[in-house]
Length: 105
Image (cartoon, rainbow, N blue to C red):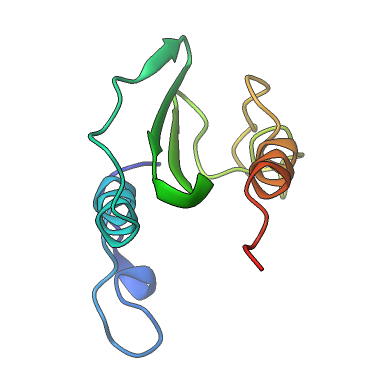
């Protein structure tokens, strides 16, 4: 779990190399003219960064310790699958983000 992508997921379907989450967050922060990166709010085992942007936009990134390859707050995909973290519920986090940042008219 963690680390740079490898194997068949090292590239997008069109062959573009996949970038780490921190670089993807930086890309969107620059594209949305966001302010400087905020310090991570760390409440072990969760680190959460928020960058505020013009027009009510935001870029957020979460890092969870010891989550493995599992959906946080979900169920293991198989008997041999990683146990998901219970530190956050990723589904709730995503829904809350979209509710807080509706698509502008």
